[in-house]
Image 1 (cartoon, helix red, strand yellow):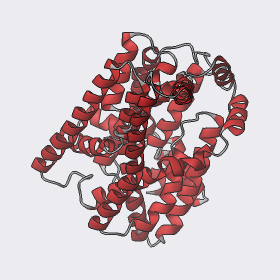
Image 2 (cartoon, one colour):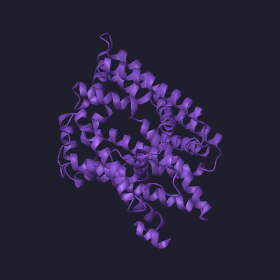
Image 3 (cartoon, rainbow, N blue to C red):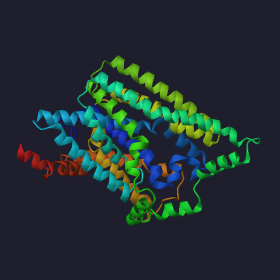
Image 4 (cartoon, rainbow, N blue to C red):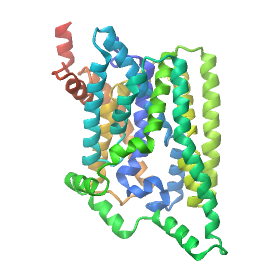
Length: 414
């Protein structure tokens, strides 16, 4: 099997492969459409039934959940790398911190040159903190993860209650200034023609994108620590606990995985299915959409991710598809950034210049071909090379030495 090496854990690679594919199905909206449409669908390119169907499918099954899964796997990866470093006689921190600093560099380049929706910088920054906890036992990791989730989600839930209360301010009997303030907030969710024009102009070239990011949101990668860093760290801690307990590696009894998958996925489908129905029925009324999508949904995303882990372990067995998914996961870093490069060539001005011309459903039509590309090129590459191209770059830069890449070199050194 081309995607197997002695130091790999197949279940983790398969989950990474599915996660990076799922992330692209969400990120394509940010690559192809005005940024405001990513956060509030009616803001741009959202008029047909197909648009609503694609939004609902992503909302119910993917959005936020695969990022949670990827964060859990990242936390497990921290433990795995640190354990192997110490087994090889190296100090764990000497391996981990250079990796995170190099990843931060990649993330910043990704943000300033290609895509506003980078997650690598956030992972790197929170990974610097996560190292402090990797030795803790499972029970303590779980307690800290739960505390992190509580600190992250409670303010949002409280704010959503205030937002619901603000709905009364637009009633006919409310004070004119209150009604005006609510109307202004609702209007702010829809970008102005000038904002749309500036957004489109920023996608005409790499330099235009860099200037736009530096002028409008130069500190956004660092501010992500405040926005969702706590959630990322809590998910990493959950991943560490899941790895140490054997849950991520498929070591639990099958009956336990069936229970976890049924309970967690059932709870997720119930919430997100009911919320999608309420949002669609209300015509994306922001007083309904924003609380259900951005605040109340938060606690259910880790639950869904845990359910997905159990379902993947149960359903994805050995075979050609599993091999391709594992190869895609082994090259998750290359596939994540590679998908951005493909999106840039499809949508930006130096490519096919489709940015801002497609609806949500039309943009999503590019997702299955990119999935097929990932599943094809990843095993093809790994038959010839030891690592994905960006995994190799990350490894070489973090170790400050030229790592062997071609498999022929590996055989010569054997």
